[in-house]
Image 1 (cartoon, rainbow, N blue to C red):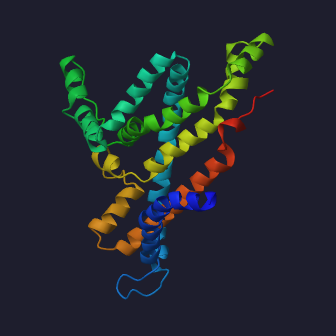
Image 2 (cartoon, rainbow, N blue to C red; image 1 turned 60 degrees about the vertical axis):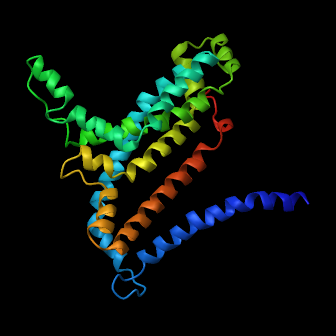
Image 3 (cartoon, one colour; image 1 turned 135 degrees about the vertical axis):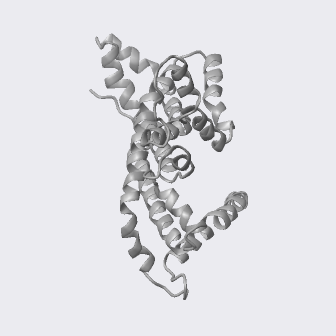
Length: 274
């Protein structure tokens, strides 16, 4: 009876997964391995991927750099929040979540207004007597847009792990003669590794597939794999090649998720460095 009840309760979720996850994935795989003209099975679309390995590599590089900067910025923020009182934690947590309540497109367009040649920052520089700086249409602007949009995805899992670290371990390390740097390096940092891996994955996955940020903040030479996929569906009239690119990107995402699950584990899997 209990087993039947569990199956009944999970049925809506299973139906949702089949209709909105498995079937779309099956459609992507079908188009990736079929000829756009005849509809016959072929590896032609996968062979054409050789033209886009450079774009994929650039997308991966930008995503890794963005995830690294998110970690540098997000870890101190998460650490600070985790060591505040309950009321302050809730307030600061809300501030981190607040930008995510705004449209992703509006957040990116706001940076366009800030960074463009006649934007707010350059106007301030000109008013102060400095020359204008080219900030938009550069790789740095794309990475900045990624970091800004995906930084909360790094802070939240880090905070969730750091806040659960047993204070008695820190006190024990201090009693054994460790200073602040040693406590952080040997206790806090190793125990927060699951949060680091989770945050890196949560930033990397959307960053590697993004296209709107690169279109608005990048130049003509800043083309990411998400841009290519969008063009194949919208402008190239070749959804089969777009599906093949999407399949490769999906496999990359699965690999990243598998690595996180393999080495991240749960919160309890962090270990103190002796």
